[in-house]
Image 1 (cartoon, rainbow, N blue to C red):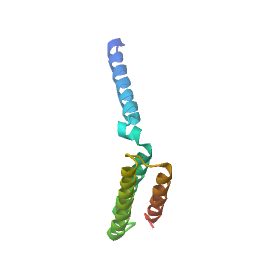
Image 2: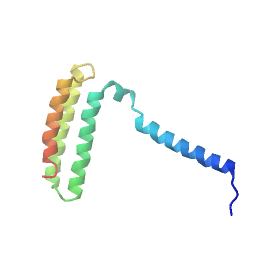
Image 3: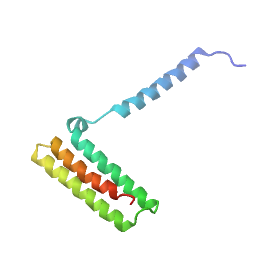
Image 4: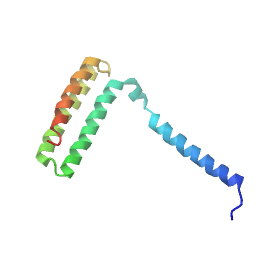
Length: 114
C-alpha cells in the first residue's frame, strides 16, 4: 500500500492548476489587433475557416482541385476587399461593410462541397 504523501499531492495539484490556467488564458487571450478590430477579425476568421473547409473537401474528394482554385480565388478577392475597405477607414471596417463581406462569404460557403 501507498502512504499518503501530502507534498506529492500538492505538486500534482499545483501542476494541474497551472495546466488549466494556461489553457484558459490562451483560449481567452486576444491580441491587441483582435481587440481593436473585432469586425475584421470575424471576417478573417470566416475566410480562414473556409480555406480549411476547401482543403478538406479536396482531400476527401468532394471537390476537384480546379473547383478549389476558383473558391480560393473568390475568397482571396473578399480578403482583398476587406483590406481595401479597412484602408479607407483608418484600419477598421463598418458594420455595413462587414455585412457585405459576410454575404459574399456566404456565397462562397454554399459552393464548398457541392
